[in-house]
Structures are given as C-alpha cells and as structure tokens.
Length: 138
Image 1 (cartoon, rainbow, N blue to C red):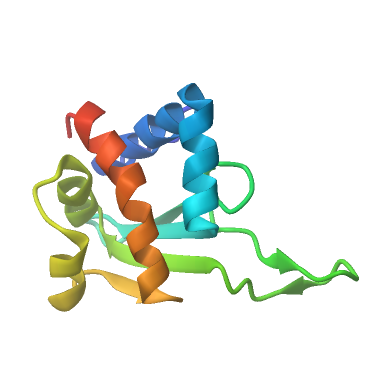
Image 2 (image 1 turned 90 degrees about the vertical axis):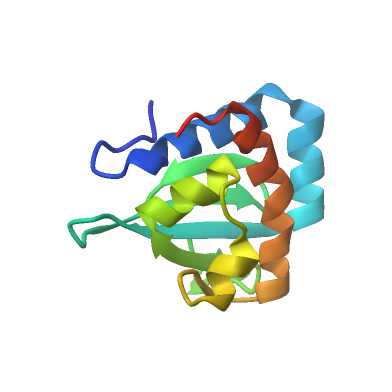
C-alpha cells in the first residue's frame, strides 16, 4: 500500500523511507535503537490542507499514514508519549528537506519547521532522511 498522496507531491518520500527501513533489517534495528521515538509529520499543501504521516522508530521501524499513536500506560489507557515528536512544515519544504536541498536546522530557525516535543530528539531523524535522499527524486 502506497503512502503517497497526490495532493502532497513530497509524500512519495514516505514510501522511500518505508522501503529503506524494510529492506535493511540491521539498519532498521539501528535506527530504532538510536532514535527511540515516533516522528509524526504534519504537512500542509499549497491549498492549505493538512495531512499526517508517522515514522515509528520506537518499536517497529515502519512508516504509516495518519497521526502518530498515543503512548500506552500499564492499565491500557493512553497517555502523552515522551518519545513522540510532531514536525509541522509545508509539503514543499519537506520535499526540499528529503531531496537534500535544505537543512532541518535552517527550516527550524526560519520558523518554517515547527517541532512539538524534544527538539534534540529530532536530530535522530537525520540518518533516516539521508538514506531517503540518495533514492528520492522529488
């Protein structure tokens, strides 16, 4: 099942990231070990619509469409996950980021990338994006 949405051209990168994680078992395990977080991406397209994808580098090492899941307490109730980050940016800027045409730090400092959660944890996403950069043709 494709994660790409025609309304969000850069969303094709999520298929590439998912494929990259699934094709390299050792790399996926290393990414999960290093990041230990769930990265939720909220993209806004040119029409002003928003959609979400998430990259689970806490347990599964997989990419899914939609909001990131809430954490679970021992009693089964949901709770805010301390290892969950939400990155909000435009579809165009995400495309540039994945293609290696801009840096996350630059987008963050200019206010084009908003991060909810541990900003330092967001840097753990960089190696996964680098793998996608070599395969992306956005």
